[in-house]
Length: 168
Image (tube, rainbow, N blue to C red; front, side, top):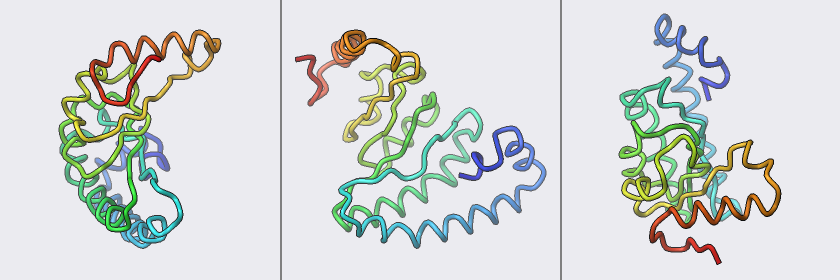
C-alpha cells in the first residue's frame, strides 16, 4: 500500500532516506488492517484478497520476509478461524520469494502471471497446497474468444497433472 501511494521511485528514495518515517506509516497501516480483518472475515464472503501487487524487484526478499509475512500470518489466522479463505495478488515475477509465499497460510495466489513468473509446473513445486488463480496479461485479453480458448488450452496442457485443470 505504501509503495503504491508514493510511487516506486519516491518510495525507494524515502526508504533509503527516511526509513523510520516509512516504518511508522507501516505500523499505523498494520494496526488499522488488524481492525479490519475480523470485519471482512465475518462477512458473507467465502474468500478475500489481502493486499497485492508485491514487487520483489523493489522490496527484495529480506523486506518481504520481515514486513509482509508477519501481516499475512495475522490475516490468515483471523480468516481461517472464521472458516474463510484468503489470498494475495502476486502478478509480478516472484521467483525470488516463491518459497516464502509457499510457506505462508495463504490459500490461493491471485493473478499469478504466467508470462513473468515461472511456468505452472515449477510454481506447483512451491505452491503445493495453494490454488493458482491465473492472470491474463492485457495483450491476451484482446484476443478473440477462440484465441482465448486456444491460449487457455495451451496453458492447461503445459501445466502438468495439477488437479482441477482440464482442457475439456
